[in-house]
Length: 462
Image (cartoon, rainbow, N blue to C red):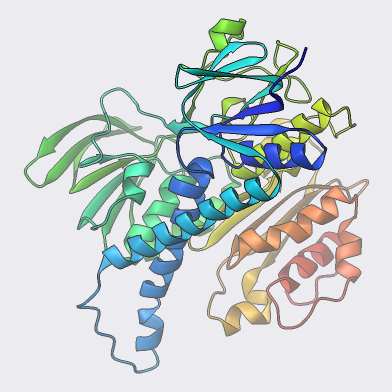
């Protein structure tokens, strides 16, 4: 049977557009259907604009560094609207870049809402039907709404609403202390907003390593960011000044928090409703599409990647899954299913937090035989020179084989530094190999070298 395309991709986010381009590179005729702008949530209302705002926030916050040099800084003319415009400029520029890449690779971009009609058929806006030998679902996710805290994007914000603010509130309550919550706390506090964070579990970044969370908590405490851990939100009401949030701590103590706005960031929900999965008999589990090792669904011609499957909801995971799925369609021999212990995590707060592999609490829970090696940031001369000495590098390793089991970096540029450790892990190198490698001085990456030396028992600068 002749099809319109070898591959039809539903969604042009970091999973979908990468998959389409990879398909074209492998000689497949590909099309992408997207109801919004190219780049998906990540590029338009997620990763990119948030990092642009973080950059602007850190520039603004650095006024205290200038004051330390005797410079008088007048911020009375500060206009957050300009920071917002810069974040939108970055998003728009990169969205246009994705359009260019799709065009360059001869991928047809179809604007509209897609619905799966059959194993090889997709309708666009209910009027036009196109066919594909393979169909890839990459529809992403949306902010998760919880009962009792509906988004109105005025007083009660989702992450989307927070990124589209053109004027900052004087105060904000952030419900959720995960990576989205702490990044927004960092942004808001840097711009002078009074911030309070409410987290159901006992610490910030509850899925990161406990010692990394402790460093971030100390930083937030120093910045006077309010933190309410082991606390649940029991209700809210609109007030003349904004929002009143009812909370209850683990011991039963109740209180009311007042803020001009409430930001609810308690995870993301997969976009699997209304796309026609039921038309081909594909069910979901807790909203996610079950897939095999190569992202294939129960229907042989259909694949699913990114936030709609039960893997970490990260842009880089979606992109890699797109590559795996397309290479499998093309009859190549891709590496099956991403090893979760090789997925880097990156949190862009201050200090930054990055990791991969086992956290220490996981290693203990699984009864792993492990040892840890740590090196403090302040032992690397560069961190002191740039006045960012807080943080550490931590390596978990097998004491018998020296295999790297996981690594955690908290401190300046942690999200960049983590990849040297991950490359070592992926290349089956040992701490000894990193310990012997000459690192330029002074650099923050010397802290990685010293942590590797600590694993070998001969760290120099501690």
